Image (tube, rainbow, N blue to C red):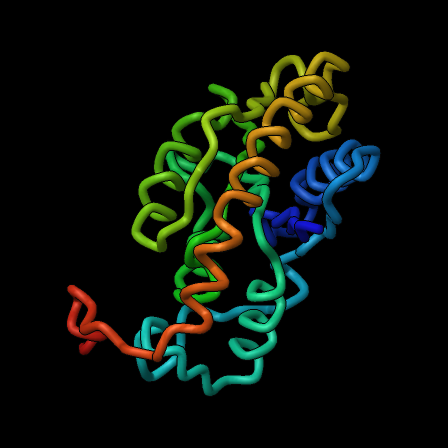
Length: 204
């Protein structure tokens, strides 16, 4: 059975993000055929990326990085719940993604976003970021409006129609997650080889 993580995208005090992620989780858990779990990036207290080597080498040294890597590696697919900050995703979510490499590879991802324009620009940036990490992103996505799905722009009050959209996105996510399973198994059993990253291992 697929294991799918619902990943929060904000760590700020007073965030609405956790309420949105919990709503997604509640709808997802009504389904059969996959296991769903909330992954709250705030719990990992990740500082700005502070590992001495690129994540491509898989040599995590900091306790927070190891804990984060172990969590993410356990999932087959992800739903990223992202706000839109200045036409992009949040710095906290980008940083959390940047901590890892192989743990993301050959998996699938879907999106739930929110913002003045439904968070669509945040998702477009996330699709580019995740493509570099060999994550296959599904087409269906859920976009929530600050005007119609939040009271006073803060309290989350989703329109009921979004539940159908969640299921459509999850249908695609489960299908892609299953298809990628054999590829993940093959890669895990292959001899390890580290490619030289295009950024030179983030030498600075």
